[in-house]
Image 1 (spheres, rainbow over the protein chains, first blue to last red):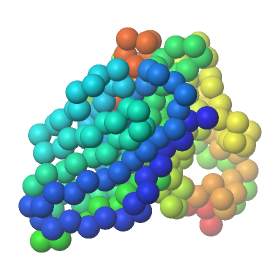
Image 2: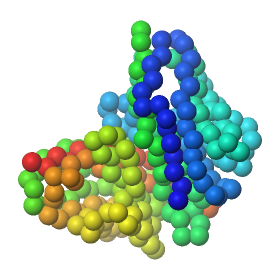
Image 3: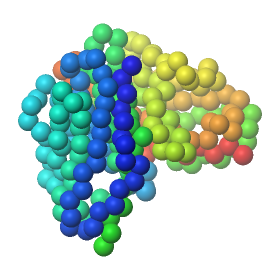
Image 4: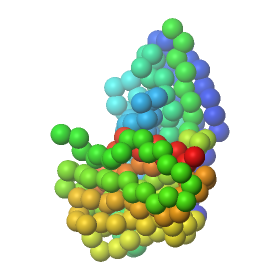
Length: 118
Length: 116
């Protein structure tokens, strides 16, 4: 069974600084997808960034980027120039392709609570 | 023009009651999901459903049942509510098919269920 591990329950960063949230996963699949979701106190689940396992290039979205190491099964999220609005729970999630009986549900890590200090 | 909407946002009820949570998506997606987020914020899949197949997480009690009147709706019915059912329940949707596998799921805002 696939599992996702986020080893940092809480992290803290100074405003304008850079922080990296770690995520590792376990799978025997070669084709899969990885996501980072953000959940602010408002409870919404907001997609931050996604990565296809077959792509070697690390995904980037503005201040957010990932370090995807397929062999190590690692998928960390880097937030540059941290802003107060980045304070939230961050969830790493794994998904297998939609075929062979899969409907593509997400498997989540337990989350990392990020605090941003002014 | 909310993409995935859930009602109600909050639900407070007594143990033993039966309740429903409604979910609607206007994205034209063919696959919908229910996730449960417990008090420690852990999110876990309960059900996934498209117009052909319902996949149930084996750990979900049979007091929980999803019902889909059409492709845009997947409601969650819960019978004989227990204290341990207190959680936030999220509905989500995505487009099925292998070519859409990289597309993210879109989530509703969640329903906080509190059992007294």
